[in-house]
Length: 107
Image (cartoon, rainbow, N blue to C red; front, side, top):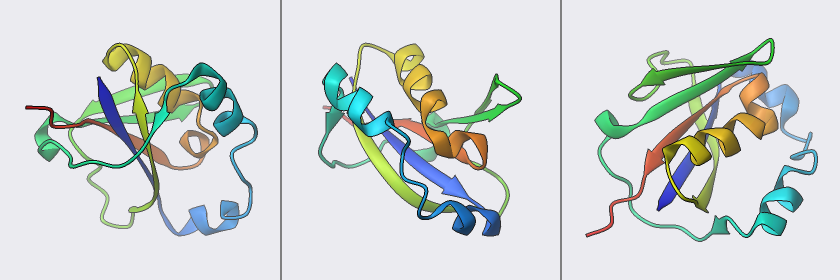
């Protein structure tokens, strides 16, 4: 199944704009999970992932804070939501912002 990883952050995210992905892109390319773009399913089907102190925190739906905004995205293809969350939790942006994981609409 395909998932869109919406990489979100507040004003502090600008400090990390030049950080790169710290090997994440290379690891995911090696795993063969990175894909192209597509439409998204409705926001109520989204799962938001935050990592704080090495703990993965999940919440249903999109982020609520209006200060946050989408700063980037990744399209992945993996077995299920658990794998998508595992991939999102490894992204460096999850440590200073949040990553919304949304399934792609597939008729």
